[in-house]
Amino acid sequence: MSLRVVEWGFRNQGLEGYYARDFEPSVLAVQEGLRPEARRARELEARVYDERPLSFKWDEKFCYAAGSLLEVDPDAVRALRLTIEQDEPEWVERVRHEWRGYWNVESTAYWSGVPLQATLAILLNLRDRGELDAEEG
Image 1 (cartoon, rainbow, N blue to C red):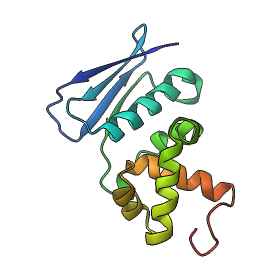
Image 2: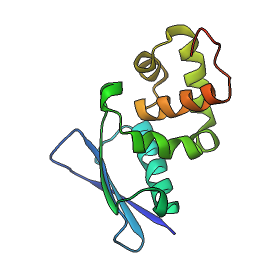
Image 3: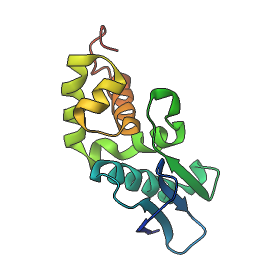
Image 4: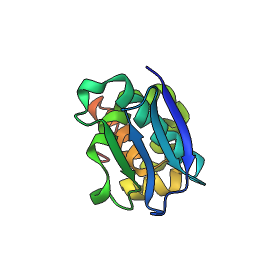
């Protein structure tokens, strides 16, 4: 499977991307001017949706920016957990470094420059492997 990524000028500035599997190849439209880290996270997320279509129940998805943990899409985190460490090892180190200083997911995302959904995916992977200190996790 392949994924075509295009920039699109969505009217809703909170919309970072739109993924559609109904096309050949599948399409991810990302908001014009999206910062590079947010764009990369949406591309990684869409690639997992494309590679594992049976794991996600829909053929299209609107991807909105998350300003807090309450707004994070659990499917985005689940998708990113599968490949984020292999695809963006530098992000893992940035998140690990900032987590030690703040112990707060939103602050860690802000100071590391890693999108919130990717930060959460990385922290969950580290926690599951026991790589976060007990007092930190």
